[in-house]
View 1: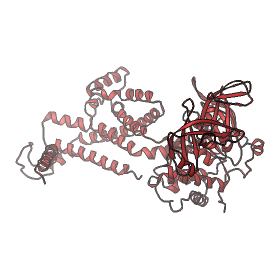
View 2: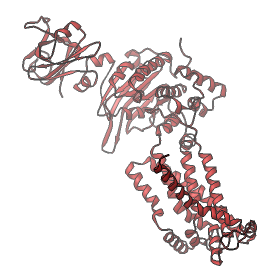
View 3: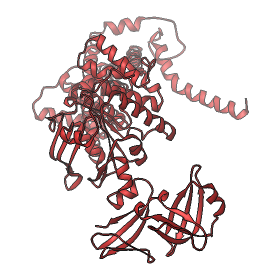
View 4: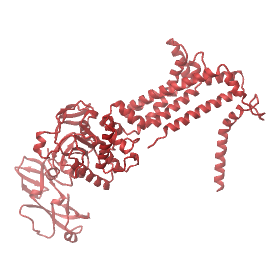
Length: 257
Length: 373
């Protein structure tokens, strides 16, 4: 191999190493006997997992995170897909303006969004809790769904849907028989992104949850008391959850066509 | 050997009398406008059983809008549409006895060939045995045997087209509508598919209406052509009628090649290009003389022999293009206008070269004088 080639490959290797080392260390410290995140590793243990699972706030936080993530994933995907389908029927200028309008919340910094939502819920007298978190998450996840599905619809062959109607299908049936199967990979991809954003969110959740807790908020609470490897365990669990969602998604989107 | 697939209506002759007696499709005052923009001016059209009708026109003339109104994809702004006697004006496409083959085909990319063709029958909840039988027939008609299990995305353009036709015909529509059916195919395939479509039309004896901007396609397929221009029907007739007797300058230019010479008619006497003058009854005013390239002859020499009722113009050969079966001569006549003449005489081709003075002549009955509006 040429010298330049070796250099470039070496560089790429270093970049990869730089990016993946934190993840590797994160996983490593889950199993370390050290109470501080430091080298050398004193020995192997599963104590941190036990400690986390015995923590009184862990299971409620996990439960809340799952409820929020799944609900947000389903609702924002259904609503976002419907919005994208509606914009696809409009003339180009209209559809672009409408898409921009719908995606506006994404451009706000999460902190502002959190404050705005908090004062909104306060002003209409709504009690903070999981419903308010879910609604708030919809505000910033749905635009991604709209953008992804709308991009797919831009290259969509409407003649296929018209053919289905011509062959006797109602609008709804044509949607489920033709439109949805064709755009399914994009819809599932959009749902996964919405779920990942929701699962991960800390700022907006903190403002809108009131007394409860989700995994990121639980982590934050622990960090305030001091860093110990339980944090790593939660992080690894979140990571596995994300990878799991992605794998399911990849399998579901395998498009035979 | 006829296929067992039949369209919803019985076979019928193609004569004008039958057409007028019981039209299958009857459009009365059908028009479509979007705000101030008019796509189709209110028009009447009757299509008889068994006709193979081409709606021909340049892009933007309203032909696809008209087809989509017949199929139920667009609601007309004015007028009524009747199919088989029933008023379908307000019915959606799923409730009309028509089926459409879309430009680009609109196949379902996530289904196999057989699933595509069976879709409409499945919606009707037909018994599985009947579905299988009719799908097999439709595939046979489309020369698609053995392709049942293939995904449609793995097919060539011509095969996809036949799937689209089979998927529509399996429904046994009273009228099959085709939107630019051959536009997406390359030239060679287009010729082959023309034959396929003619074969299919013959074997089921159904009524086909198709839209095209390609005059050759219209001439090659249709038993009757409706020419549209700017939302209006400008001529309606058999391909022969339209080719031989175009009613307007637009039609003559659009259908086949034509030489157009501007002139005037005064008191029954037509003058063209200064030197040409002949009697032709009609109203006074500007006219266009339309002459097909194959209708004229080229003669050499000082005083060529020209028929008694023929017209002649002197000129000079400007260009010679050998096209295989015929040779095309571009001849500059007095005044500089170019006339195109095609001729199959190889002896003539040997005698002519660029710059040679010639005489273009044609019998009077083979040109047409078209009054300008």
